[in-house]
Length: 265
Image (cartoon, rainbow, N blue to C red; front, side, top):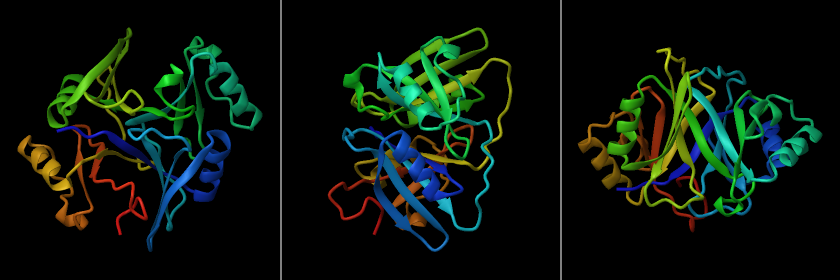
């Protein structure tokens, strides 16, 4: 059982403003759009995406333009070539992006900006072979029990623990499918040692995992005692949702890239 990470969904107050921001600053393009009565979903990502690469899903609810970012979700991270961190950050500054955490303040290892709704975006240095410039590298979520969170991803989803970084006050753990391409997005689990709890907020939506067969994948998750949050039948057999031990929502879906739309008919 293996499911590559398909997308990360975030909620935005002004869809057209957000689209312009990501298209102007990260050179993202619109991959697909779904118009519903009460909301609009748009998939975006780099023009040259690897087949295992992840997209960003922007959701605009028609009845509100205000969201609480909370602190249970941390950031999405985008890649730039190893020798282009400062250049890439300066490009963003020249575009008028707010100076949030520049490369110098991060020891020239990474940098951070924010999108119009306050979602944090980390810029990380990667080998150019590991994906297109600005492609999604990982999504960071905060967890209250590192052992439980790692157990969830490695047992329920058969993800591989691919790396860790320990500091004096926190640790970061990276997981993704064992057979996923290097270009695939990872999940970064951040565990703070001080025992704090987190507020989920509503500005972040979910992570999505792509399944070859939704029904079989869901059945395996249920056998492994994953949370039965929204089963396939309740979602017209187009997708389903479970949650991790900290309440982060995880969508399970099939994907037909040859279909007329990336969204279910």
